[in-house]
Image 1 (cartoon, rainbow, N blue to C red):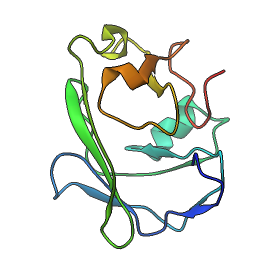
Image 2 (cartoon, one colour):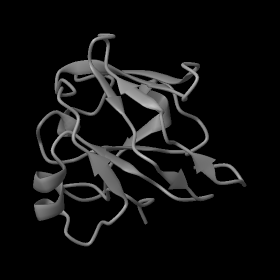
Image 3 (cartoon, one colour):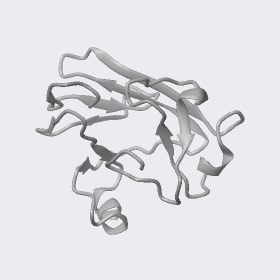
Length: 132
């Protein structure tokens, strides 16, 4: 949440490129400056990152490693985010199954351009926080 006010995410919907793939976010508030991880498999995520507490899941569809669309809608159905990513240049190849993640350079600049994203410094990224 790059804003100055808490955001109530309850009833927001995560979708990929297909409208039939949707995940309804549970009762969740996101404080200013806070992060929330949305997990396909919450139990698996918790085993991999036991120190991360700010996550919700499970959504019953995956985000394709070779490129996909991530869309987020508020509780009224208004589009709040639409993001396309790919595994072809100029996107970093290390994020294509190599263990790195992609992080926003500026949390307020969501976009589908690879120029607003950077490769995580370490393998596995830094889920649930800004990367130091």
